[in-house]
Amino acid sequence: MNDEVAATAGNFIRHLIDSDIVANKNDGRVATRFPPEPNGYLHIGHAKSICLNFGIAADYQGTCNLRFDDTNPHKENIEYVESIQQDVRWLGYDWGDRLFYASDYFEQLYTAAVELVRAGKAYVCDLTAEQTREYRGTLTEPGTPSPYRDRSIEENFDLLARMRAGEFEDGARVLRARIDMASPNMNMRDPTLYRIRHGVIHHQTGEAWCIYPMYDFTHPISDALEGITHSICTLEFADHRPLYDWMLENTSVSCHPQQIEFSRLNLEYTVMSKRKLTELVEEGRVEGWDDPRMPTIAGLRRRGYTPESIRDFCTRIGVSKSENTVQMGVLENCIREDLNVKAPRRMGVIHPLKIVIGNYPQDQVEQLEVANHPQDESLGTRKIPFAAELYIDRNDFREEASKKFKRLVSGGEVRLRNAYVIRCDEVIKDAQGEIIELHCSYDPVTLGANPEGRKVKGVIHWVSVMHGIGAEVRLYDRLFSNPTPDAAKEDGDYKDYLNPDSLRTVTHCIVEPSLAEAQPGERFQFEREGYFCLDQDQQGSSKLVFNRTVTLRDSWAKIEQQQKV
Ligand code: ATP
Ligand code: MG
Image (cartoon, rainbow, N blue to C red; front, side, top):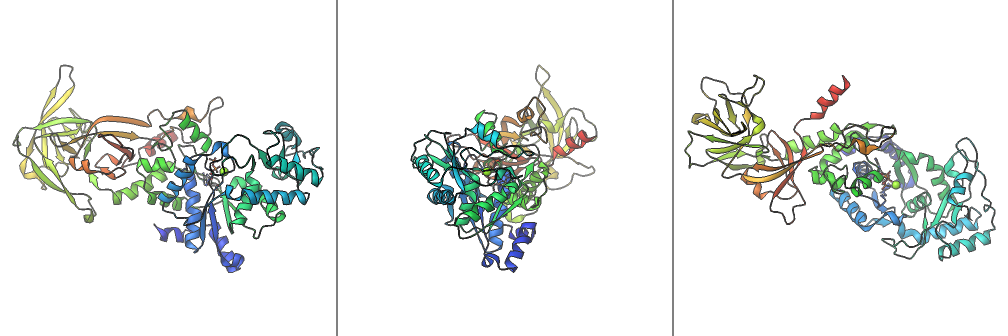
């Protein structure tokens, strides 16, 4: 992992930890946690939080716990629990033996609730959800105390025990903190601590509980039980901080973690809320959580992103308190730069057009030895067969073209990458006038040498007809065609901005024979086309499927430039 970069990237949270260490707060200990709710797959925004929490733990010789915030069983399941662990590990982080579940603490949380009841700081409230909202007041008006607010401690104690025992229906009662109905901070107006939920089987605790603690109650106590020192969360929780502190001050916990907020990652051309991502999956707008167009870690992995590129991205975007939206180009550049260095080069023809080289011996095959990387010799070489019949890409030929078209034209010359210079002598068409074949000739002295007396500028890629292997290529593009799909039109929603061209599948591509040995997930640069990886989901299919990770250059930059004009 690129620890040098991570360690030097200072931010306000690290500065704060530095001063805590100087002051010997927490005896100089640093303990963080990453607390996902297992109600969906992790996305690139979570990666920011993962890199931050695990990165701080690594750099300060501290610890980082993985804790599932699993208090909402009807939306959670074990598939999410497992995918989250897989994704954190894949990103390069290790929680060692510190895997926890908020549900591990259900008994302790209940004890804390009883403690609040006994101290007169919590009460059982029978208002309906709607009444509770009405009583809560508004930002400009104080709330009205619930008529149940002054129940006796004994009655509250009895009712809470009976809530736990399953005597009441869902929604009949809740346990609330007794704080301040007139507080200017709405979160402090007697927030709910427990609600009743029958008939759900919790993925960890099964049917042991029919009351479930709320996030604002669970989170601070879980943090304290784990001895967390710095509880890092996103900005929307800033208004909850007084409540976080209240919980810790009013229950007997042995430490008081500090909540610190930073601004969440927003990324152009995508949505990040789990509700919306779930919707895309459930409505079949994408092929699943790991669809390569999804901003999920699983999707990015299947698309061909490396963990290094995602960590690099998280370092580049930094950590602050100001709301901002990061350009998609920043993420794409991270993978481009990483793969430029790492990915072996290959040739693959996406739209094959056959050419026949008339003056090349028709039964000869030359095995050309070719470098796998133009700058990095350590990536070795491979053999590419050259023969009289080749495929080139349809887009690399025009019957007539301006001088700007540096590829093959009728009567013109072009260099075949890693091989000879050829000339197009004749264009063969079918009855409909469609080009079906080119007849060419080659210049035998141009293998690794410039032709004599003339300049040939263009270079195109090719694959031998006899040796090439068929492949499907999935050309992925951005899932949304609008940079801010969340800022929907008045009568529409983000789905109106789904990019209809986010996936183009090309089924009859021809790739060079060495790719027969490619392993699922392996990444390559297809010369002149982009970066591709062999799809990981190849079970039972003999067909090669390559996912385009990213194009060689940012084609959207131009489009955005035009839109600004
Ligand atoms: P959503 O709002 O999409 O449902 P969430 O914040 O509820 O997401 P959690 O599973 O609770 O999702 O998130 C786990 C951790 O990841 C939290 O600490 C949260 O603050 C952080 N996180 C979630 N989204 C982002 C983001 N876009 N940028 C940075 N951190 C994020
Ligand atoms: Mg959450």
